[in-house]
Length: 71
Image 1 (cartoon, one colour):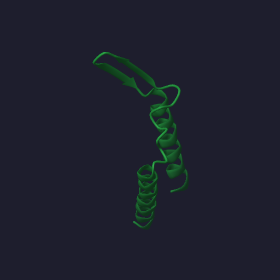
Image 2 (cartoon, helix red, strand yellow):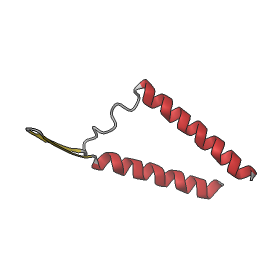
Image 3 (cartoon, helix red, strand yellow):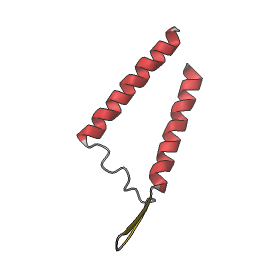
Image 4 (cartoon, rainbow, N blue to C red):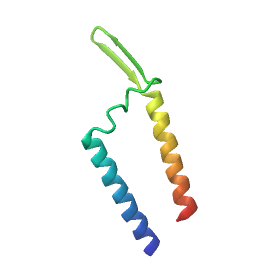
């Protein structure tokens, strides 16, 4: 159970750091990347964050690889 506890502590610390960065405004660029599609016409708004979701997918895949590799 010791590796699981360590992994939970590291994940919690990582989540706390990301939360502090979001709170400080360090991710204000997120959602406005060049590949994100935003269409506004009258009362209709369509938003498809393609580049942002691709970035999240790559980061989560990299994190999963690190967890499988080292834990």
